[in-house]
Amino acid sequence: MANVRLDGLYKRYEDVVAVNDMNLEIEDGEFICLVGPSGCGKSTTLEMVAGLTSPSEGTVHISDTDVTEFPPKDRNIAMVFQNIALFPHMDVYDNVSYGLRLRSVPKDDIDDRVGRAMEILQLEGMLDRMPAELSGGQRQRVAIGRAIVRDPEVFLLDEPLANLDAKLRVHMRTELQRIQRELDVTTVYVTHDQAEAMTMSDRIAVLNNGRLQQFAPPLECYDRPANLFVAGFIGSPSMNQVHGRVENGVFESESFDVDVAESGVEDDTEAVFGVRPEDVYPAWRTEDVTEWSRGITTTVDVMEPMGDEIFLYLIPERLSRRGDAAVIEGEEGEQQTLLMAVDPDADVAEGDQIEVVFDRTKSHLFDAETGEALVHSLQPEPPEVEKGD
Ligand code: ADP
Image (cartoon, rainbow, N blue to C red; front, side, top):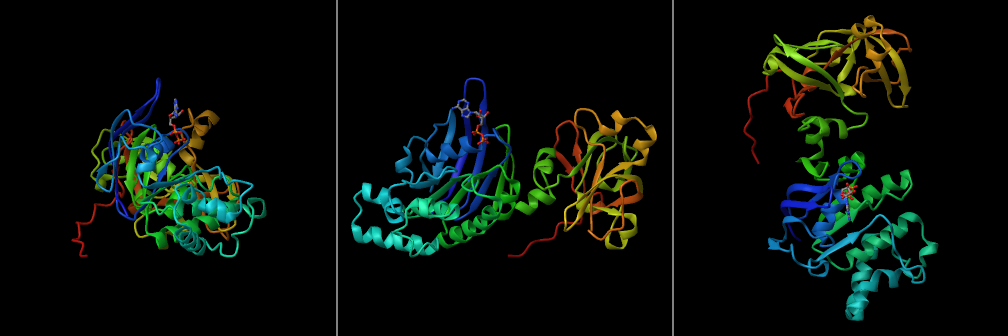
């Protein structure tokens, strides 16, 4: 059991800053995910915790001990990688016990630890199997078993499920959570998959360009994203983001206007309005919405039936009136259509005109210059309630 602390951690390569001033405090027994797009510095951060890469600056503490200069073997960590490297000519028992045998751990002790790991991993009865006789998920569990028997203080996992097929990946997510809870061991898990991070972790550390963007529980990242990057990265499909300006208490854009007078955001602010697809409603459904914006007339451009819901790509009337395809498509990938999620039985077709409203309590404003969140509701924030334990 151990806490992990990263203080002012940097990793500089010749022309890149792979990790830029990382500060993280991971609690004892916590399961955290480092998540972000490819190249954002997740693996480099994990490797610095493991001792496989030395930081250019900053420190790593495990169990309140400064381990920055310690080699990996003295850190009491175990790592599982994306590529499962089992020895093909050894059976499960020999694969799992390999590290312990190298360190001349007594045979009885090895048998105890392997037995317990097999139980946790639900691999009992498979000790004699060769890797070729195992499924992908079982092979991954054997690799985890090899990490478990070392009885580490900290588990480090780098995209361990990336090579598994989609169904098995979802199953293994639940398995890993169960295993982690049973072992109650501090875990740092690297993934580029925001859904994996959302479902598995106690807290998510969202990274971009080597920098920490937000470190919070999954739902907080989802409901109260710290900035535009987190708003766009967490959640699928992404939050709608529309550029505009706040003037006289109204957010004005090329697509629509929204009254933001009660949000406390000052006039003359270049802002980005954000709303998740599930917080956009057809105006006929407003009985479900506690607080909604004024109706916006739109045309259904494209429908994407997903089975449990339908995604509608809507073109606000104001944009289509301008009649210019380039305006509708937006410049440099800037979003102009509005994405809305509706029930699968909704009576809509491409080309239909529909009026939509936003849930004002789930509408966000971001500073267009810095990207930082300004408000997460257009209603005045309710007074803070004292939280009891
Ligand atoms: P992620 O795991 O998020 O995909 P990495 O931590 O692997 O990202 O890499 C972060 C950045 O550092 C990338 O731009 C990558 O190209 C760079 N980088 C990683 N390792 C090295 C290295 N050994 N030499 C030079 N650049 C590296």
